[in-house]
Amino acid sequence: MDNQSLNEKNALNFEKKEKERKFDLRPTSAFISASWSALFIGMTSYCIGLWNAHMWLNEKGYYFTLLLFGLFSVVSVQKSVRDRQEGLPVTDAYYGISWFTTLASILLLIIGLWNADLELSEKGFYGMSFALSLFAAVAVQKNTRDIKFLDEKEGK
Image 1 (tube, rainbow, N blue to C red):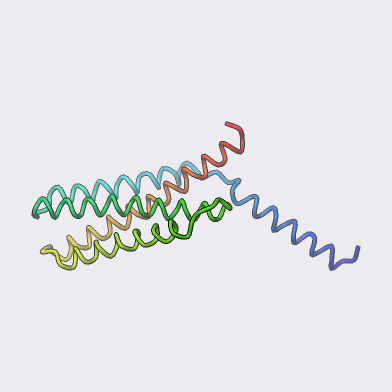
Image 2 (cartoon, helix red, strand yellow):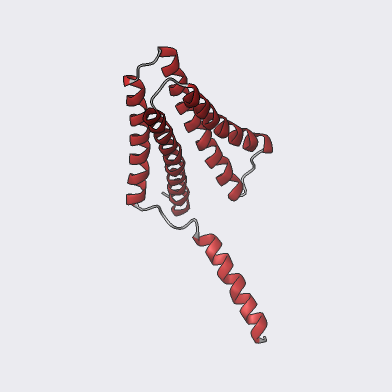
């Protein structure tokens, strides 16, 4: 076997091992804790802000519903992206709807805050706690999925 084909074979083996390895790493307890903490802090801050806000109850309901809608949407996006990555079937319709609802929840929050009779600092607070919650939900979902995958692989 010549040197070039041996190098190509080694490169292919390395790529194969790297692909297998990317799912062999268990999330650290620090990352899991940070993800859950960020989700708890983001959601709690957002809800405490709503509780203390001087707005009509229907407005509070709108913003609370947007939080729930956004959280569900980003978890759906993360799940469908991960399913596709693992070769599990995900319809284009579900994949598209997941992305559409995620973007819709963000856009609806922006429109709501733009038109709200709130101080600029309050608008920023709601935007940042919403963004933190969505990001943390993706991280928590990823960690949960990774741990489940590794536990099944190890036969636990």
